[in-house]
Amino acid sequence: MYDHVWKSERQKAVEVQFRNLLKKGINFTLVGVVGAIFDYGTRFILLHFGVPAFIARGSSYIVGSTVAYYLNSFFTFKGDRSAAEKTRATISYIVCFCTAVLVDLIVRHTMADVPHVLTISWVISQAAATILNFSIQNLWVFRAGNAEGKQAEPGNTEETERTH
Image 1 (cartoon, rainbow, N blue to C red):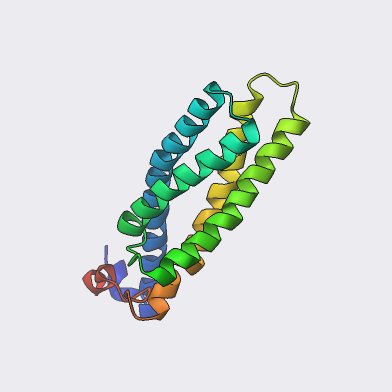
Image 2: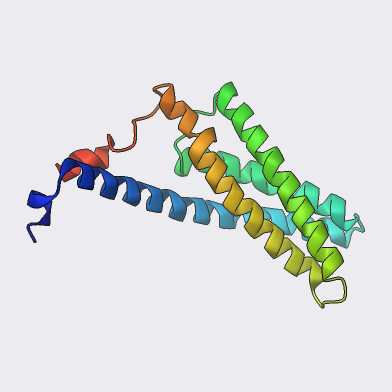
């Protein structure tokens, strides 16, 4: 009940950072679901029209990632969508794109005889790219704006002010 009285400033800051990271993770997941719907839907449509799986996966990833970037820049990381931020995001998405396509290719070839291999390979490649993407965006793409004074530093947010 009186924990807030006895907590050090450092403990309070760590708790706020944890809550902020948790909130980002939840928002990122929700945005990711929307991006994944666009991604999988695009892949499904392209495969239906006979586009090779490798090209369909690459194209669908670009569509889903574009949707996710803009949603994340508004709702998850509060980005400024500047040229520098978009450049960092593009680099991030290229790395994640290569990861998704490579993992998809590996899974499709190693599990070629497994039923529903295209769905399985999409899920596994999406998971790998998503984990990598969150890490890069949180630590570099949108964090760089913080270092330039675009956003409040961690521990110096409105939420911190409410806990004091």
